[in-house]
Image (cartoon, rainbow, N blue to C red; front, top):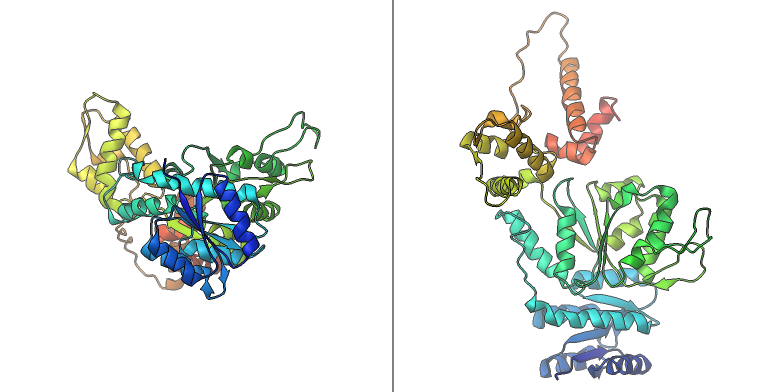
Length: 445
């Protein structure tokens, strides 16, 4: 049986020997190098299953080696060995294409887990890379998302998925998990905004019996439940400051401490995060920790809104209606005017709102054809409606009138987006900063 072959690149003989012994105990053949020049020679001579490289080498930077491997051996996972606490350096390596990182002094348990995940990528070609039947749409935006998922599935880097509510952020996260080396372990989604503040630490990290009133038994936390798998933190912007600190430590140290204990437990979890809020703006306003933001935002993915991919609406309509009527039943027709109306609508609720509209239309339609009237769409669409004609009077003040119109439009946009300022700004076609300025000017802050 063919044994995997690993390359270890480090200028410290003791660390090279420790890593070599560990990998050989895992039935992995090992080659070692002490500098970039020797490692490149070995890479050209043999076909490796994975590479472990120190960040600081005598004749170069570990990042240079990562980039070289990405260019010449793109299918080979490379992990970086970095000094304790050098999280910024590790983040740079992940952005450059590194599979994962391990800190010095090297924890052998963490190293073995890392190697196991890296070797699972050898089976990757057997995994169906396609996701067109899950993430529907032929628009450029959806094609880009699907190709991005294929790349992200091969990495262990934290991913931040941004986008409005109803755009399928959890679906993207689940696909990243399903197409990667952790696919046989748990995918644990959690809505950070749905957990009471006083229970958050226990929910995330678990607790020991008797650690607080009501703790009648030991409880496993979400991190432990996701061990060897993926933890998806939805609405991560809702985490209070004290939990942001604890989450940052858990990610950096790859360990958690259950409530009521003094010892940390090692965990092997890939973190994927999402929120419909503007996390960068929250950092500027002091509502979200900058260090945590940069730690979870190693790679950012944008889930496109439905209005950004209006050409996908006919395909989505057909798919949703088929799911509603069930297999074998006659599929209702949607007339051209109804489709045109859907493609011109702004969809503040995105795909989720499209599903609700079609379900209502299917219920109310008295024939097998859904018309524009059956949709019952709000009057406002992409095209701005013509303002009502006014007749100036001697006491007419244009600035006051325009201010009242602006106030009414902004309030309606906020109500429509459930007071999500980022979504309201997109609905109005202005920047978040411009909306904040107008809110302040109109006394709506």
